[in-house]
Length: 192
Length: 192
DNA sequence: TGGGTCATGTAACCTGTTACATGATTAG
DNA sequence: CTAATCATGTAACAGGTTACATGACCCA
Image (cartoon, rainbow over all chains, first blue to last red):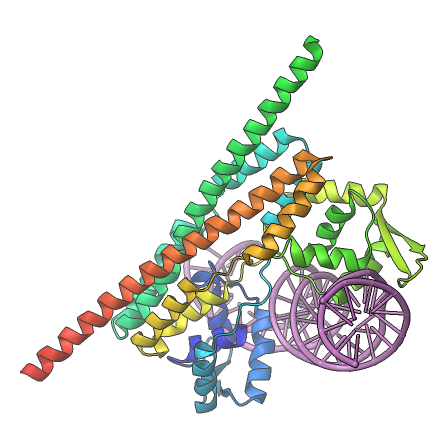
């Protein structure tokens, strides 16, 4: 998957490992992450596979760099992957895992957990996003059709966050009802 | 993470590796997956860590089994994890990755992609869910507080699916508008 | 002179997937 | 008779994280 992300990124112009890392960090961070260590490793295997090709570029005042560009084989692979209706691999959601086993803790603590989760914005911070947006729109001068797809992924992030907040509200309501029922039960017991 | 899921599962009664696998397959499948190979490996390392303890049980008419139960140390670790507000590790969404690079394909193909995605139910099939629900409610006789948390995760799945369908609708609308604009542009050109 | 950016990587480790291997019982 | 269920694992590989290591230039 990361391999295909890299192919997509260099499909409109060669990039260094470092540049690829910055794009992941600044623009794709709301749906994928990648460390330099992994990027350089993937670049090596992709070159062996013939999907990309390396050019050593000498620079003055800066370290030399290795620019990776896509080969025709790499572009074929990119299209093949885009068209392939592979099911996503096993879905993992750590928050739901926690939620599932939360019964081990007091209800009050769980309500606090959901309140904190609701208030914590998971979506990348405004500042970075504005920069990323600026980059995108600069690219869009040449390729307006690229910007639209970026907008679609951003909209997903927004909708996901909204849904998550609503889900937290639902959880809080459910747990409060549950807690209140228990309270009444207790009071009745001690009243007898 | 899987380790903590396993701890949670055996916190209310020892289980075999096989039983743990069936719970992942039947009840937790909407937010986590795990193969037996991984489960048995994790059980080994968890035993070494002192979180769980193994009892060999002889059976007649069935193969012998190894029942794993949680130790006090394991239970401490479960609570520690539940309370730990660790950020989730790098979020990965293959669908958004594809969306981002979809500009490489014709718009018409992309619209078809979103239509297919919208119509494909990612949520586990009804039948299995009913069985899982029955299991949960059977458990709930003893522990009504456990069933509520399961309900919360199910509700997340429902809300997520709904959001995803709405997002697909949004994407289809955006791409149709984009396509229509291009069409008009083309007609104007050929009209000149 | 100290921190940020540009630039490249290695090593060890952990997590997850795929494929393989075995074998008894039970229900249709 | 055959497929499903119960039951246990190993081996190889792929993907991802953390920690470490180096070094020059530029700006404050």
